[in-house]
Image 1: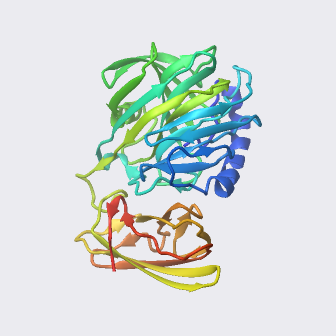
Image 2: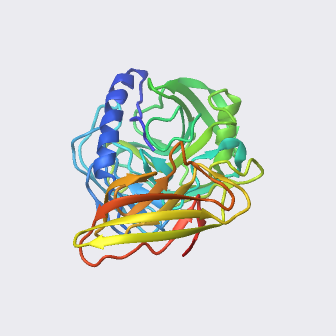
Length: 376
């Protein structure tokens, strides 16, 4: 997610606070243009695209003005260009990554995050990295937690899993011992970057690939008092923090699933039977859409999120009765405080206005909190 730039020293707090505002502005403006093609190269500072109709790949170059590009593949991405360098005793250049969840209102298609920790039975994930030797970097898997189900801004606690470390760099804070998590031994570091707590697990030697349960790290973090079972898992991300060079680094494959159940059926992320009615009024170059989301299940859905993909050439200019982000491509509509619940047998309606080029078309599929909906 990178709500704040990661820092190798605690003194980076002020820089991180300033950069977070810039990241937010940049994300709203530039990262809101995901595409749907594999092998798509992105060089925009905060540009992003989607892969597998499930995850977001982001360039996320926040710590340097040097050129950086990522190329999305069918299963991950590679860092195809990574110019320049920054001092190794300061913040890294960037965090090119792929994620499931939400990063500054940019949510992956159909995600069921945020989800309450107590309502998650398992969060299996698999990652395969590709490394290079002529760079200074870490391979970092990030897990973000917050007391609220927020989809924007800085989360309260960040868990970093360092799969590899190359060069004279170190995590935020200081070492606090070792721990066995997920059947592996880790060096544990704890600290703060000024706006959120950071708990880092550093592998003693490089891990090229691994399948594990994200909740093992979440529960360990809860046991240390850095999060609570009533908090929310908002995002899981896999990528790199390069300080020097980095071209050729790759996430060869990435998967992330969050399994919910056994809790209050109103928790965020709870699947629901649903039907979507999508009505439009279209004129030359513009349109409005009125969308009704009906809960055809037997339990209420709280903090509903409807994910769908706008056809190519369409862009949202304003919305009502919901927050709809980003403005094009794979978007997610989220209920507001006054209409965040859809009662069993009930519905909520929202709308938006937009522009289009070419031939107008409607979205072909919708998911409500990760569950596919029928259409009227």
